[in-house]
Image (cartoon, rainbow, N blue to C red; front, side, top):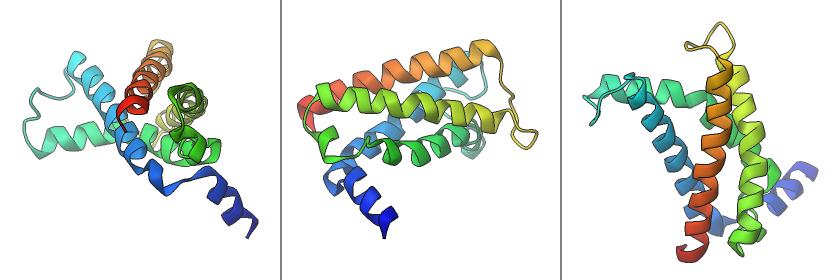
Length: 140
């Protein structure tokens, strides 16, 4: 029951809008990068583009789903203010992105990891998620 108690302190049901927003932001900035590198079309040209986008995003979404609850990105404190929410988000994104990069570096995932890509994922993800959480603190 120690694990359940730990997660009870880290996940608040009221944070569902934050979780949905976080996932959409992660997908949006990965989609923007995929457009930049012409991996997908704008607008997505069918199931193939959506599948490609999800394949690119999957390692980072997996990292996020594992790390964010452990760090407390969806705790009651994350709902209080941007001052509380943004640092929790940044402390969640950095290890989540690193985990995503590690997953991408395996031979089972296409794409690999270049230093520039890693830096972009860390920085752009931090900025996008941080800005989203500032907006969310005002309206959610």
